[in-house]
Image (tube, rainbow, N blue to C red; front, side):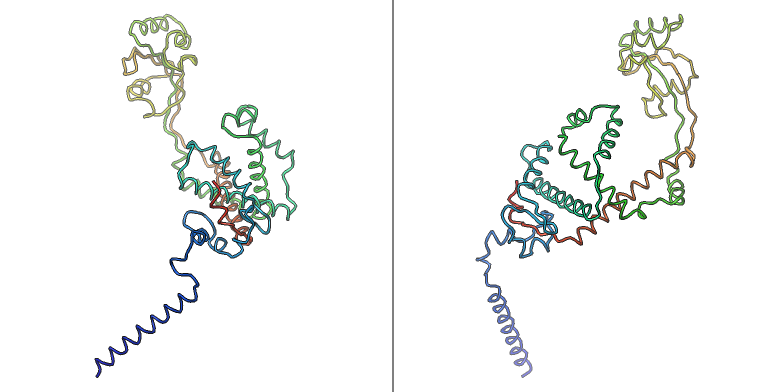
Length: 350
């Protein structure tokens, strides 16, 4: 009787399970065979970078075909996404990127457009702007970093167009001002933080002994002998280097600059680190040719003091804190925003 009861119970449970499966299938309204490609497009897929809630939202498919997304009600058009994606593709070395690269570029491009809208909206809300005077001062600063070169020439060499560069830099400056206005306390560096950083990274401020030397390089021994004889007769080492040396530094009198042990080939170190300032070596036959060295300066090993390192450390920590504050602030904006994605149209942009 007990075995019979157990068997009946098992059959009963199987029947209930089949009934539940049937009810679920009936409620879904679609069998597996009825699922179309359109249904698959409306499902968020790994690698698209689309927010699952937004991608699965009924509102996403109700957006017009001309709109890729809305950010707090403001539209990002398919045309704008396409134009920005093409600009990104033009900067790629690959003329025909594979599907994975295209997906990544599409994701990054859309995220950048969303970020721009969020920044612009918040700046408008707080009445924060970047004036033309502020932007021109920034342009001047960039040009000074490139030895006064014109900004158009700098961008041309980097393969960038000025309008796109100006847009991105104005956005960055605006974001800086927004972070300053909203998260200033997070970007402040306390004196003890600077001290702690220095103590933890003292080895970064240790510099080994260095020497400064000049060289003459020739490819035949007779030329090297002639050069050395002229130096011993009183000629300037620099002038003789310009006259005879085959090395690229000949125009600078053969100056190699400062270097520590292990930077140059071992045969260089063995000679110059045993010399005194003003000494001229004999001719040395190396794998490069026939060389003559003169020691022009030397520095003892030293450690940069805390007071000397302090400004640099403070600047570094401020930069790190600003980056963290920016990321945190942008994440908060995104979390508070209503972002609707028209995934069907986004996936067609290429």
